[in-house]
Amino acid sequence: MKAYEIMNHLEKYFPLNLQMDFDCCGLQIGSREKEVKKVYIALNADNETLQACIENNCQMLITHHPFLLEKIKNLDTSLHQGKFIERAIKHGIVVYSLHTCLDRGQNGISMNDWLIQKLGVHDVACYDHYEVGKKATLNQAMEGQDFIEYVKDKFHLQHLKYSKNTNKMIHTIAICGGSAADDLEILTGQVDCYITGDTKYRHAKYAIDYDCLLIDPGHHLEVIIEEKLPELLEDLPIQIQIHESLDYFNMNKTLGMTQEFFHI
Picture 1 (cartoon, rainbow, N blue to C red):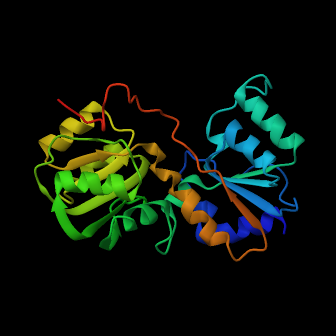
Picture 2: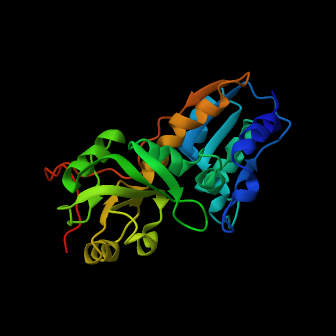
């Protein structure tokens, strides 16, 4: 089928008009008329996933994070941006990204719907006016430390970091994949625990001061796209290959640490 038919199908769930002002969703490189027999799904649009797409004989790379989100200053093919563009064009690869369209989603199909449903919840609702982050009530309340281990288990994490105010019961939670630590300020008083990535020291202090357990599993939590997006494509007459992306960060195991934590 044509690349544009796959794009149109995905945009039924994630219309491009949902993207945030800063974003660059949709077609990144290539022809909408390209005949596509096999797609490659990955969290990131980078030279690693593009090369894997080529090696697996795919004609289209579908990602969450857009290649064009990073400003392009030149097309020097010795650098990563120029190399990516040259390689994609040379091999006729269509690159397409959904990012904040998928973050927002609609009708219960979005990044944060997928993430929060993993944790066994009910009464899911948006917590912000952008309709990105989600909050909900746990089906079963648990102690803070137990909930931390529960999050690690549900998302198959070896490491995460969290604020030290763990001595509390967790009934209500909020989650926003990626980087949304400043949302903590609008969530205090609404939920017992907030889960997001790319947090800083000041966020841990705020979480402790206002007694909201803060859990940071990393930005890579959004890799859930590689599990969920194929489900939306399974009825199309195409083959699907998944990248199984690893986090850009490696955790140092030589210190004997089983987890990182905020300590102030």
